Amino acid sequence: MSMKLDQYDSIYFLGIGGIGMSAIARWFKHKGLRVAGYDKTPTPLTHELLEEGMEIHFEDRIEFIPGYISKEKTLVVFTPAMPKNHIEHAYLKEKGFTILKRSEVLGLLTKNYKTVAVAGTHGKTTTSSLIAHIIKSANMDMVAFLGGITANYDSNLVMQGEVNNKTIVVAEADEFDRSFLRLFPHTAVITSADADHLDIYGDHLQMLSSYKEFISQINRGGNLIIHESIAMLANEAPHVKMTTYGMSRGQFLAGNITAKGGFFEFDLIGLEKTMEKIQLGVPGFHNMENAIAATLVALKLGIDEKLIREALLSFKGVKRRFEFIIKKEDLVYIDDYAHHPAEIEAFLTSLKAMYKGKKITVVFQPHLFTRTRDFAEGFSKSLSLADEVLLMDIYPAREELIPGVTSDILIKDITSPVKIRCGKTDLLQKLEALDIEVLATVGAGDIDTFVKPIKELLNKK
Image 1 (cartoon, rainbow, N blue to C red):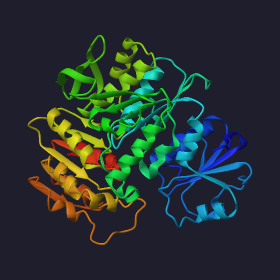
Image 2: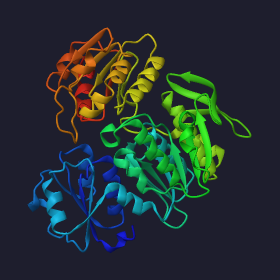
Image 3: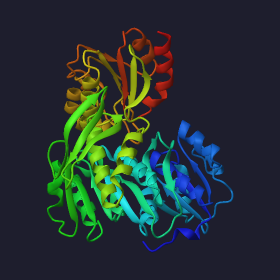
Image 4: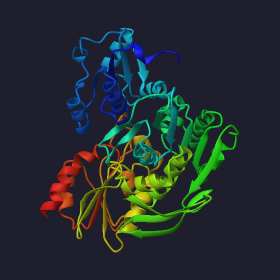
């Protein structure tokens, strides 16, 4: 794509409240452009964008599009999650505006910089946030476009120094809608490649084929840091320097693991000299693997081992990724974004290891009818790790109803001692009737809107 972004003085976002969209919106606002947009519903994130000076409305109406936008000086950015019958999108298209997908804009923003792109079905948000935190802590010029709000910086756009030819860009490489194929990174990390988004890909093999294409787009002589379980994806990529990692296998792995309250200390084995007693500031088994990947990126960027250690310990995590809402001796409440069976299994396995002997209660809101249908068996199996499961209705997001696909297809195969179907109207009532020890709310829909009322409920009990 030969177009240049500097020809525009305003940017209009359709779906501005999306986590990936809002990071780009913040970038353009930082650069001094006028930024406005539409989103379906107000959220804490859209409230922050409004406070930062962006114009946002929540009704799909042409008359709410700002009067100053013009097809010559305004770029329109949209998310593929927008419904096909969106009125504003159709109007702007008819009027001849330049309209790009979020992934296309991210590709344009990153193409002239040394880019670190992090891909994977799960783990990419925490891993990219860790990488960004390490680079920023090392006082290097950097920009990071993240898929979550980092607790350290309370933002999904993290910056350090001036934007120049030495700037390192960290970006999440999202496999949804093949978005990551707009990126041509210097260094890529692939954390996992479990089947997902089969509504887009059709089957797992097609998805794996897109990952191979992403690998082919890494700069010649660039780096690929890939989880050892999927290293075969790089079999046809002689142009890259491949490094494998894992928990217990791969060129780089964790050893001498010790845990205290779910927070881990480990040695990084595989270097000429083992990095001993690395301490993490975030809990969970899976975060050791994320930390290994982030450390390998940092070392390839020439960052000092001492700085890496300090950054790993000071990293506070990402909101809605193993986020503690209440942490008391007799009551724990954690909120997590997990929405795939493998993510739920990793999350609950860590939770059970952290709170041995405690009763684990999980509230889960499935995300998408197609995902629920395609992975029903896996969802039921992973949720069965909990002692009590409260199963909410499916959050449809961009999808239309699929007849016969409801949360009921999951609950019948969940083997937990207690399993309860509930909706938004009776969730709090059913939670109040339970004796809670360790509670987790899990899902990628709007379950996060219940975090505050659940916290208030638990604190009153």
